[in-house]
Structures are given as structure tokens and as C-alpha cells.
Length: 329
Image (cartoon, rainbow, N blue to C red; front, side):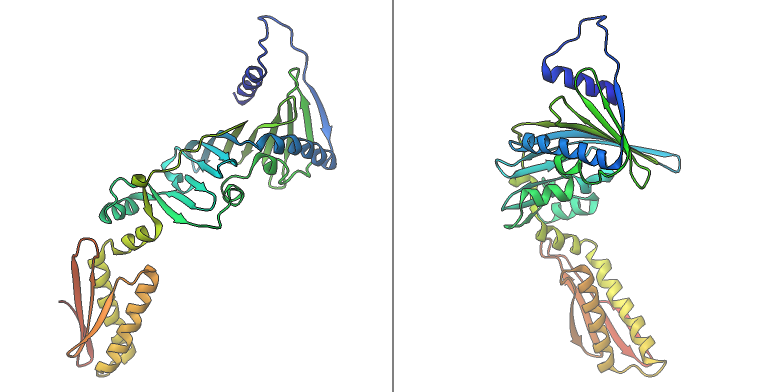
């Protein structure tokens, strides 16, 4: 199927239609040493880099099989060096981390990941948000593209020193095939001008196909209504299940205090010190200061207030003989 699509694309791109019943010349396949393959792919990288200058885009299809289960994904991507923007999307909900947008000198947008982030965005007053925006004045398109999906001129020479074959087709297109050190099978396809048009990767349980086109691209950056600041989103996520976090901080503090007291009478000063350490550790894990702690008679009060809903939750931890008792306030 991939070969048929590649031939159709090449034919339409050159405006050549084969007459019905026209005889096709046989493909010519030549074995290449590792050094020859490296040189051949470098000869593809040069014209491809030139073709990339105004921009490039494309799509991908992938199938993954593991333990008898098969999943598939498809997506699109584009790089617009003129405006300094790029994007990549995936149709598979399990690959949301792949979807994103970027703008040079401004930052990048990542798709909200799962129900928790969507619920947090809604709670924070951004019900229509689909993406979290992280500002980055130093971001470059090259940096972003390299991380998400290398440019075709870079990808084609990322690991070229493997023996393989070169197959030249009657329409001038060429396929370069080899297996890498991990036994992954790669086939790079170039047009008659030696510009990379696609690659097919086959490995155990994995089948991927990427195709590229070249020229000016349109990158539809997310709107303000579709965005929430990453720092706001992370803070909102930390406040999800706030009451449960306060309860856990109190009950776990009580357990730690009793353990450290060694079955001796719990001293209020020690209780406060150890409880504060537990709360500080919890806030550090949240990466947001959600929990507050204050002294009360006989112990401490651990609390939190949601900055958006104004909901509150509080528990106390107090010394009682050889025990530390946690109770809802």
C-alpha cells in the first residue's frame, strides 16, 4: 500500500499520467556497502535541505502491536520557518503528549493531558482550553522541531552507515533500504530530484510511515480561548482533590509522629516540628504550596483553601499521651 501511495504522489507531483497499458521498465536494485549508503543518503539530504527552506509538512501513520493488542495512530505536522511556527498532531488519545504547537520567541502549546488537566482548566476558569501554553522567549523552531520530529534532511542521515540496497524506479524515484543495529527495517524514498518524500519503518510490533511535502505551510496556532497558562494549569491540578490531600497530610503526619516518638509520650514541640516537615514534603511533591500549617493548642492545624472555588479543608493533629491524633477540623 505504501509503495502505491508513493508512486501516485510522485506521478501527480510531476504532472505525468501513464497511459493505460503502458509498459513499465523494470526496477533496478543495487546493493550498497555501509559507506556507499551513507554517501547516497547524504546526497539526498542536500537537495532535501534546500527544499525545506520555505517550509515543509506531512503526515504519518503508525500501528503498534503488543501482547496481542493493536493500536494505531495518524497525524499531521508542519514547519514554517518564515513565521517561525510549527505543529504536530496525533489522532490517538493515548499519544496526547505528541500533539503541540510552537512559535519562535514566544513559546509552545501542549495538548491538555487527560481528564485531570481538563478538569483543572475548567476549575481555573478556562472551560474551553485545549492547550497549556508555556512561554519561552528563547525558543527556536529548530529546537522544537528537533525534539518533536527531526527535519527530513536531518532524519535521513541520522543513522546512515548500514549496508543495504538502492532501488531506482522507472519514474526516477529511488528507495534506499537498510536494517539498523536494532534490526529495524527502514526504507527512505526520494523523488527524481533526490528530495526525500517518505520513510517506512518496520520493527517488532511497530509499523510507521511518514510522508513529506515542501513549500509554504500554514500553522493554525491555538487561540487565547483555547489556551491556559501552564503555570496556572499546574497550580490548578495541585488543588484537585484538595480535601483528600489535607486529610492525607494530617493522617500521615500522625503516623510519622508516633513512629518517631518510639512509644513514648508525644511532645507537642516534636509533633509540630515533624508535622511541618511532612507538610513541606507534601507541598514540594505538589510543586505548589497547597497546604498551610499553624500551631493550635496541643498540636497543629493543617489546611488548604482553593483560590478559585474558595472551598476549604482542615484537619488537626494533636498530642494525646503516646499518640498523635488526627481529626477533621
